[in-house]
Amino acid sequence: MTTGTIKHRHIVEVTDLLGNVVEYDNEASFLLLTDVYTRHFNIAASANNLVIWDPTDQAAAAPSSFDYLFIRSTIELLLALIVDEDDDQGMVPMTTKLKAGHGYTLGSDFALADGAAVPPTSDIFGADGLDDVIDRLEVEERNGVAGDLLLIMGKI
Image 1 (cartoon, helix red, strand yellow):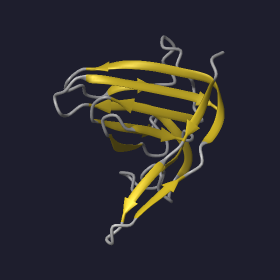
Image 2 (cartoon, rainbow, N blue to C red; image 1 turned 90 degrees about the horizontal axis):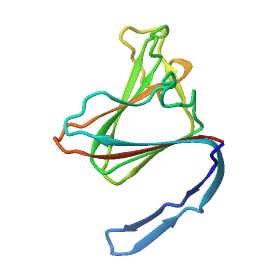
Image 3 (cartoon, rainbow, N blue to C red; image 1 turned 30 degrees about the vertical axis):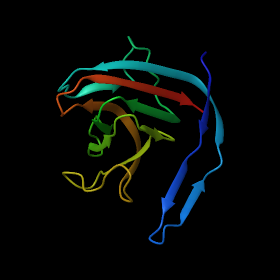
């Protein structure tokens, strides 16, 4: 069993209109991860709907769920978090942009699926919907540039 430790520290420095510099520094947080799953991907230029996590992927020994997710790419990508893939409540894809070199983190695979509307009216982080989980992660490259992606998942 692979383990790991999450160590987060964010420092934000802001210069106001009067030239005063204010630094906001959160304290580092530490959590022990168990069952760590790490994958490296080579992303081809113009890659479309590349699945980077699917809990049913037995060949990759993918975990069935996660309590911690970290993704970092060397290039700008679109990340799709697919919820309710079997569409029994109304599939909800949520897409966000991954900036090159910036980490993207989630603290769980919890999400909401919208069972009332067709097409769904809520996103996975919205106030409406039924409790569900993220079912799959996909990326898309739209700038014609190849790069690398690191995916780390674990249980807390």
